[in-house]
Length: 268
Image (tube, rainbow, N blue to C red):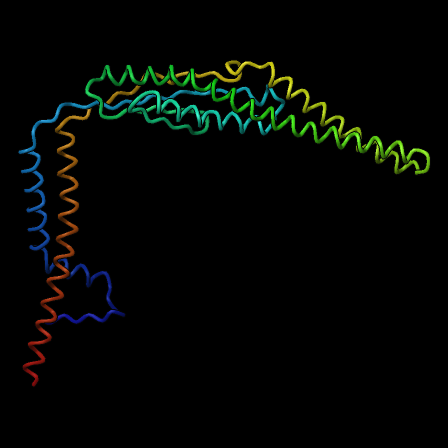
């Protein structure tokens, strides 16, 4: 019996019917895909066992406490960690490093032995401990220059306000003088805070602003030929099903067109 489908009224059951109609096509594609993948896995030379490993490092930072909650210092710390992570990747071949929240993750893939993974992760930890203070020193030097420029600007503002206060003392009312005096006091307080931050940046040691603590032992996982073969077969099953479904719909479409042409010829 001819099945007619209106694009505006096609429902899920219609698609299921087409899939059931083409079940042998789908099954055939699945069998071919699985067979080819098993043949490929079987003929492929046995690959040596490869190893992957990762370790997580907890980073506690004390920049905010040392610099009295300075947001710029906190941002400098985050930037320093980012540069240190990139430097570690350049120092230790094969290492992928990432930073999220308060944790740094070191990852190595496709190593020939578990000992190679363990040694590479240990080298990465040492490199991180070396690179982070260097990056933090550079960031704090940059921050100190910014603070010095800001301090210079504040000193100029303070001198202008003091000059205006001296000029207004003889003729202005008390309220105006009080407002100028209040602005001068606030600016002097800001300058004092900036000076404290500058002194801290000049004397603090980067190593005192953070601690790195490995979280547990490194996780090392072998990747055997068997596991890779299973992955290949799983991918083949998925692709076989997708190809089978598409081919079933295509063949069904061709059959419908042929039936319509045949019915049209009979009608004539």
